Length: 328
Image (cartoon, rainbow, N blue to C red; front, side, top):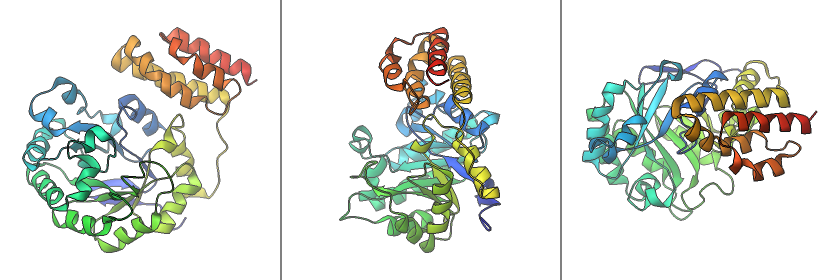
């Protein structure tokens, strides 16, 4: 564990070298981020914010930009395919006072890729360069970029892409070790992350397949990355950040939380979400989180099938009681 503890500095922003929470659209909303932060997430990134939506004054887009004190250090993540819009959006984010602005060049979702954004930019390094340069020129904080290994296995270009991103002014680069074609299948290629780390001078954040504290240590050791980032490994498991921090500091693996703690944390998460979005919308969005929290527990399959019937906090509390009864 020696050499991993401490901090990494991204454009003057100090971040503990434990684990960051990845940006995940429709998953890592404010309530989700705060739960992960309370368990020790070192750094948070917002859901994707449309550069055009922000420039054109879309209210929903603006709501994604709020950074609360509890979430810092935190980045706001922009996506877009035109440098003029991303540049203007980066300037507009100043009023929200993000610690960092991140540019998404790795999202594989068709509706994002189809517009030329996200991982589509892995096929257009020159366009990506202009976008990063425009963001850096207009931003009031450091600008980073999140990329993939490449478009597909025949076009793996993360090393060259990362070099260009650094030349354009990127203060750090996050690398998800899969191609766009892989989506989330197969295994993330950590050797490619290592190659990027060796090719650039700015900090590199390693992302992909961290589902345990041991995985996080392996990411650091195998890639030499400056910071590790957890995505799907946090689904229904915000305590993974506590486990990672403890393991990196002591070498000890913490036991999985008991079912009572899991249900307590789940209900705390739900109350936060309802506080931000109202009970009707909050519980609707909490259904998939509930399914993640109960994964692997007795009776989980049946309760997942009934999750569509959850409409109030009282419904969720009753479901938590059923989980406790089934796992005594």
